Length: 222
Image 1 (spheres, rainbow, N blue to C red):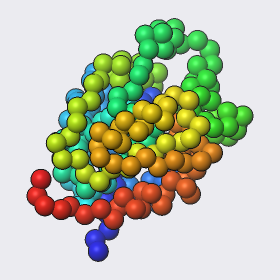
Image 2: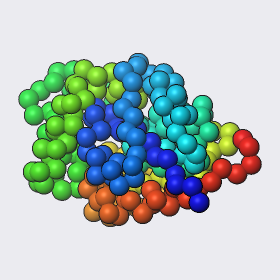
Image 3: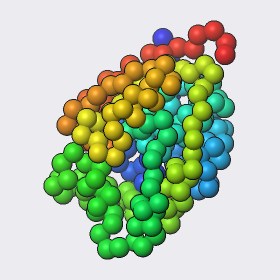
């Protein structure tokens, strides 16, 4: 049985630093979203990197990265999709964009705490702030605008799909995760004691599902 190749597309705003533990376990390639103005263009920028991976290919995307992964899977044969903390599109309000553009003191700490099941975990907040800082604030604003504009369309023949839901996620509700799974003919997997970044808060609970996705094999030519 050939070992799966994994590619990870981090969520909006970050540089992927908080993926380091899982990326190491999976020997995964972390693909930061290109600095483009819309989700399909970001996917087009990653198409070559994903197509170079040996099959079977597992594409993992978190939040905005999940939407990019969906578009990459439209362009490249992928054997499994794992989408985390995402719905059928991600709602971004005009008020949120204006807040980001004002860039008040402490905004990165607030973003980080919203993403965590335990916002009082100082070490995790610090690590997430560092990830956002590495990602770049202006770039994050452009990504948020791209998410606001993005309207997903179903895949004609979706690969095996898992949608991971941190049960304390206040940013993307369960019903949105369910809609995403239904549209992709997949399944929702709850991750306890986690919010918007279950891969970071609960890597031991997340990894078995990623390994499971790696057992997917290409079926008939698509």
